[in-house]
Amino acid sequence: MVDGGRRGTAPLSAEVHPADGPIVGDYRVPGDKSISHRAALIAAMAEGTSRIRGFSTAGDCGATLGVLAGLGVEVATKSDEVSIRGSGRFLPPESPLDCRRSGTTMRLAAGLVATAPFHSVLTGDRQLLSRPMDRVAQPLRRMGARVDLAPGGRPPISIEGGTLTGIEYRLPVASAQVKSAVLLAGLRASGPTTVVEMVRTRDHAERLLAWSGVPVRRQRAGGEVLTTIQPADPAPFEVIVPGDLSSAAPLMAAAAMVPGSDVTVRGVGLNPTRTGFLRALQRMGASVEISPSSDGPEPHGDIRVRHAPLRGLRIEPEEVPSVIDELPLLGLLGTQAEGYTEVRGASELRVKESDRIAGLVTGLRAVGADTQEAEDGFAVRGPTPLLGGRCDARADHRLAMTFAVAGLVASGPVIVEGIGFVADSFPGFFETLERLR
Image (cartoon, rainbow, N blue to C red; front, side):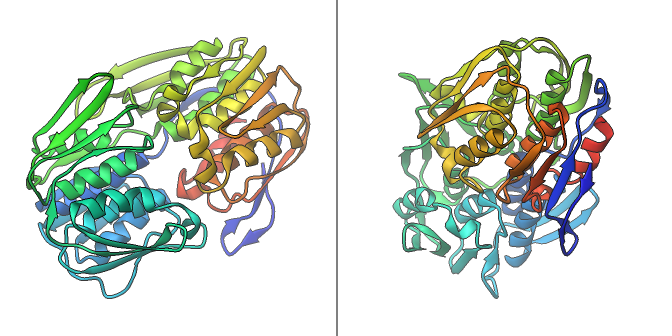
């Protein structure tokens, strides 16, 4: 693997060569981003010092720590250990709070600052300013915050927080980020706050709130999932963040596709709302062995993946939330599987860091894949030999990692452009990829 052009210290492209044999070995990946974001924000609302080990070193999580520092929260970091000293209150920021490229930071922080009796502005770089934020503004307005957006429901988000009222809010679109923002705001509201989900999404916020002593009630009613909290003060806590399953997924996909491969990823999060990719791999025929552990608020364990002949599968809309970040990798796996691989109900992919549906289809076609784009997903016919070529990741870390893995199973080098922000998600990804060879 050879880096190409650079902007500062961030490479703009990488050249990935075919694997020269089976991929074998044990690996570890950075801490889970979703858990790290939420642990930091909940810790900031507690009065006292919380300690988070295994905190993600990804750029997105660094953005969340920066926002907290801008609100006067004491944050100390040492490698992947973070100490956060909360006081139960925040200070008015001296300038707009920079969420960089992190949509998770912006949406979750909106719920946080809505509880504070002052004016805040959440902003970020150009890519983030193009993403929809009305979905989080609507429930916060209903709770009593004043929330203003740019035309088209885009950031920056201007929030005048303070006195909030608990509400029952039915998510119109499956979104763990919006759910988490509403629950964070509900901690400082008068009366209970309930979020109703028609499709269950990742529940890291609920688990961490309960871990910090907040009473959380979850129940099913008529096929819906209801999560209710009362106003409460989280207690300081200590937690170990497991490895990020979405970061482990490229390594597992490579093992599933490269003949003779046998890869184990240690200490990975196994939250059932996040393991759709593992279930999909098993349905496709890959050998997947899971050795779970259950200490702490989040299940975790070791995952061993071995190569086996793959077959296509269909991802239904209700499965999408549990595999949303790994859908591009499933498209790549489909190129090496017998039959059709189809994903539907995933229109959310069009409003991520890029339009991931269009970007994935264009990139896979550039290296010889037989794939079609749908409004809410894509279809891939396999198996198809992948050729060397050039793919544009569109500055999207998920597409960049997908196309890089494609280089391992192609017949010639794959040049991946637009990789400069992979560290937003998986610091050291290309170094880890080099170790796979």
